[in-house]
Image 1: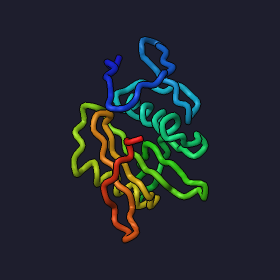
Image 2: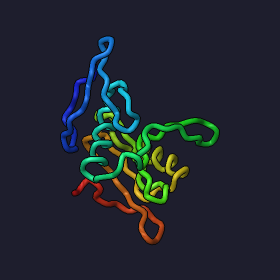
Image 3: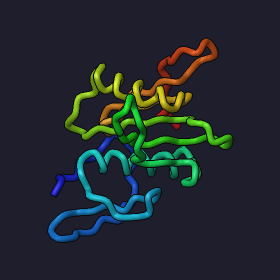
Image 4: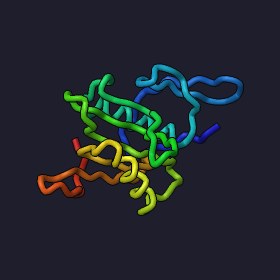
Length: 147
């Protein structure tokens, strides 16, 4: 079982159960229990942050869907759409033990070529980096996690 760590995100109530000696956590977007891995712990915190702290409607959030990138299938972690069904926020989640590097940012930027999201975020639950597209069509730092 994954040892649950406190993250640098608000605390939420999660539905967790044990199945065949493995822990699972309920995903409100996919509406099912999924394996509780370190990355999933971060993903679920971020999903709850979007829903309960940023008040984003669940119907506007997609989780772990396949994308075709240069003939290979990849999976993005979290994508938030705006009211016009355009990509608004693309989030890449990592385990708390994974250092966020330029390679992580490159992975996010490659995924974003499919979506052109206005906001992109990388988080390992402890450290978060967020950028927004400015009026000059350039990404700049911004504080997504401030209320």
